[in-house]
Length: 161
Figure 1 (spheres, rainbow, N blue to C red):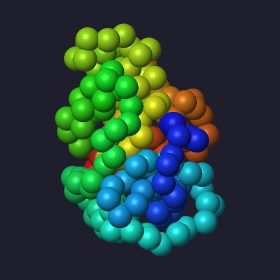
Figure 2 (figure 1 turned 90 degrees about the vertical axis):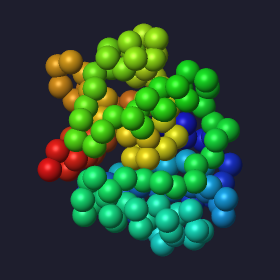
Figure 3 (figure 1 turned 135 degrees about the horizontal axis):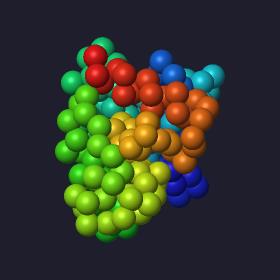
Figure 4 (figure 1 turned 45 degrees about the vertical axis):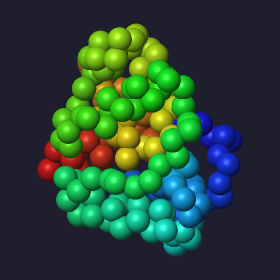
C-alpha cells in the first residue's frame, strides 16, 4: 500500500469480518482504499463516492458476486502498476491466479507483479487478494502473517462461496 501518498482526507472507515477498510477521497472520486486492523474506529461515509462504496461493500459482503463500480482517481500508479491493476480487475470472483501467471499475462516478472499488488491503491475494487503463490495464499499488503493474511484468506473463502 502507498501509505503517506494520500491527498484527500479519510472519507469513511467501514467494517469487515476481519479488519476494517478506510476510504480516502472527496466528492469527485475515491483516491485510496486501505485495510486497517480490527478494532480501528468506524466512521460513516462523508462524501458521495464513499457512500456508494459503502453500499457496494455491504452488497459484496452479502454476496461476493456483487462487485464494485465506484469512481476512482485515475492519476495514480506507474504504467506497469496500472497494467497489472487492469488485469486484476479481469479476474472473476471466486477465481485466483498465481503471481507467475499474472506476470506472463502482463509481460513482466513475478516480483514486479507482487510489488504492483502491494502498491494497489484500490484493494477490493482492484482485487489483488485474488493473486496467490504457487504453494498457498502468499502474502498480502506486504505481510506474510497476522490480520492482513487472515483478511486475504477470508476474502478468498468468501468469494468461493
